[in-house]
Length: 398
Figure (cartoon, one colour):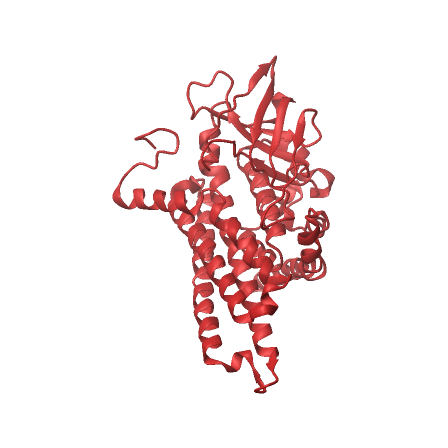
């Protein structure tokens, strides 16, 4: 009983630090960062000081050693305040978790524990002209003695030009085919990295612009896993944590938009009739429908995150639940868009002005397009339903 009470006290303290970072920094900076397209460096620093950028990292490498349930809850809470920070956070934790799963002790010391866990990581995978298939690479690494050179142009990389390290995906030198993939940890200060500006409809602060790697030298010690192991890393290192985190952020965006709409409709009074907006049945029905949608997400998120934890503990591939995770991402993206649209509708001119509601409406559009896009993802789900291969790398295969 004493140990149970201690565990609850530790959990309460850890979550109190998370909420404090969100309330005092993330929320405060959200509007300014969106207006100025300013990368949320302060927000990530506050989350790092609270320990949450190392949520899945082992304590011996400076982390909290918590679960996917905790990670997804954090992404959800951050997403309520600011989608841009939420996505940067998810990409960072995902990159770190890929190192946790496939990296060695030296890599964990240098990239996860270094600078008191304050180094910011991200994924760098998507390439131009691959039709949103972020797992498919046209680029190929080359050898430089025992080391490697990376020449690749990535179409979208969250934290582009801002990250301290990039988990980069490309083809293995002399690759046999498109599924012969290799991963590297690339130092963000390495010579030959060029990022370009991010100017988009929404998530304006997450710096998701293109990035080019021109003859970038990667030491052999920063190869992640073995040559040719990249396909396994995609399935079991990148995709699971990315998908649960992504869905959790969009759940947070939906909840944040709903809360903002409730706050306005219950406080704004029509002086000609002395009624608040929430006194109108039509408004309440819209809010009620949005609430029903939002409430579908938390139980599903916790169930999937719990399964990821069980698979992780058992040493089993987390890709066992790839399709359910994809379904969750699709549903969370659609809920975020529907609820943000409802919030805009019920708040009228107020919601249309610059602020949390119109920002949520713009930000939510990214949810549909982020890989796998909802169009591609629904096709995966349909193929799985009727027993067809996903064809991620080969026509008629996978």
